[in-house]
Length: 236
Image (cartoon, rainbow, N blue to C red; front, top):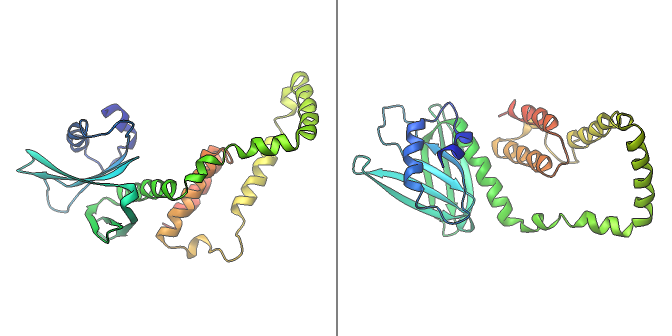
């Protein structure tokens, strides 16, 4: 389990603290439950037993050490119980809060800003998947379009196959042109949409999340995603 969590560690996290938390979580995770991110409190004063917050693909888990670290109190909330998530950045760190549908609000303060942002992004992705389950079923749509236009598609495919057999290298130059088209579509500002420098923190995170979906669906390449991500981060 520790090996799987190395990818979420960053310079603000204490590996020993993460190891303690994951050791206690190991027997609490449900089947098919995967840890998405762990954020650990970092108060200005020395805190031997900091609070932490864990997000998985199924729930949010609040971890609070008790009895000088000899025991741990866990409070968990399934994603379908969550009404919204919020991040408030301050001078000494960030507060991550989430509200439930029963109008209860829970907050973990003094989180490093980098951790709070990653926590917020992951939470937004999970809530979006919960609110828009149809998105996972959109995949078959291209098949339907292909079947309707079968006579035209077959003719095009036959021509491409001949070019691939004779000279595959001749096809490659078209890739940058296609990529430029995708870039222009993404970069274009739709009517009424704010510019990046006019967006607040939540809107910028939503923008970044949309770019991530385009990458995951294969609509943009990794390099293009990295460039768009860098542009958004300039205003955060």
